[in-house]
Image (cartoon, rainbow, N blue to C red; front, side, top):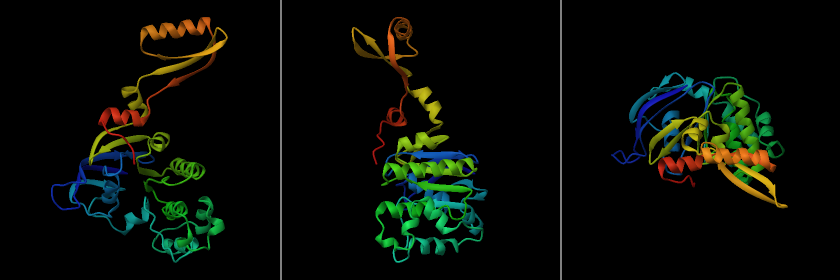
Length: 285
């Protein structure tokens, strides 16, 4: 669905590039997370791929359309949810979606169905200007689904949302994946990327430095550990042991045979820890 090579983009039209030499592939039905701190080039990459920013340098295709040669047929097939909500404040939520659906030449979803999905059905007839930032964000999110897109671009879809609403958004993304939707997720939220993505790409200072599955990254860069809590001398003790170090493995076997184990669970590196190890940079927004 996405196959691009050597993307460059400069807002100043000189050699100060917001992205440089960016290239990756996203297969149909995959969730690909572009992971990096604010200003890394995530949104710029999305802008070029969706045609919101003109192609300056690079090659590739998006949903079968060559970059720089996109047309209305492509826009009928993609959905875009922006980090910064851009709804019409003077219109109600229902009116916002009713207006937006008229821009497409393909069947669209019922606005009230989408508003209910986002928990906005009770305020469907209130002007969007009265909405909180989180409510506007939810409206922007469900608006991106109105044309049942084959390819879905999500820029920080859970930013500013409380945990319960963020969980609902994640479930919607999972549901769309099960239906075959391809998703490009741009985020600095490594928990979100870890939970949803088939592949992740680490982007820093406009460069894509690494692409792999979360599992492969954890196996390659993360230390395999197990934490064991056991009873001893009337108290509870805890040890963290390596699963690859032979002495630690022998210690684990001894604890399992001679101690009363309370709990035992594996520990693995988070994507944030791996990101810092690989890039030397943090993921703070």
